Image 1 (cartoon, rainbow, N blue to C red):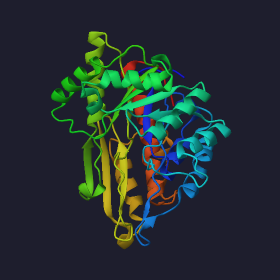
Image 2: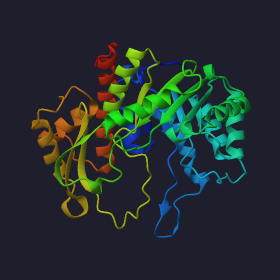
Image 3: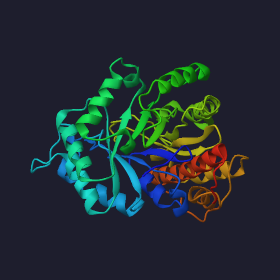
Image 4: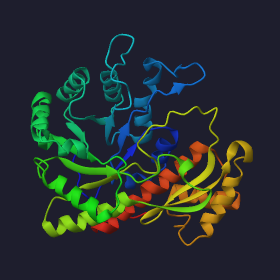
Length: 366
């Protein structure tokens, strides 16, 4: 596996709305992206005050869903949302279980590691890397890079795992920082990237992050525009690095989501009917009242509002856009929360792939 800055690395939690969005992408567009798939969290049952499932109940469906929805293309798989103390009933480490299962389905999964994880997880990943020829992905934060010991930490990790930089992918995860002021954040990012060890030697080099709100409760009802600062910074960074002849990173983001997992009691939550629609440098958010009291039918009116706006990209742009257009005229159902996530995610993935094509001058068509 190898790709450059023409590519796209979306971080996906692989819940229904997201993996259905991926499934509905045209096959040729999938060539332009490699998802960073996070094995979803187990979740908490607030009624019983216990986890919703055991680890043995939670993991078996994951590999099959990767195979069914993504096929045998390369992907990164990260277990960061699974507690490191978890073990299968037979004592097997969940990381070992997941990658054995992915292997049995023929999935081309690259394990993701972060610096200084617990020894048992590190050993499990070491074994996986030694048994396959797909290499390793190292996911780091800006805080990691800022440490004086960072270079030695990377060298120690590579030596222990038994990998070299040419077999490793490097991802800088910005998470959800305060991007403002943009010029100041750009200078910080520039400084951090330039000091990275082996910058030109990593198999792939990606930056991911987001400015999406942690909760939709932060967004007022009606029509709103939220800036995509991660995309704006990426454009600025590419212009800057091109002038300096520094390696251009691959772009990645958290799609239409925030990286934090919200453990909320759904018995107390009243989610709103919402459209999340990606445009050039921002998201359009059309938000109505909560669906418990006002129903799902309001989504059709949201679709009508979006289709009538100058920002709608047309029925032929993506599966998500076709759904919105059909819902607006009544030929598609209004769906539910999972449907809306599928629609917004599918549109976003398509939009970013085309935006990267336009930015870097690659060839990509509908």
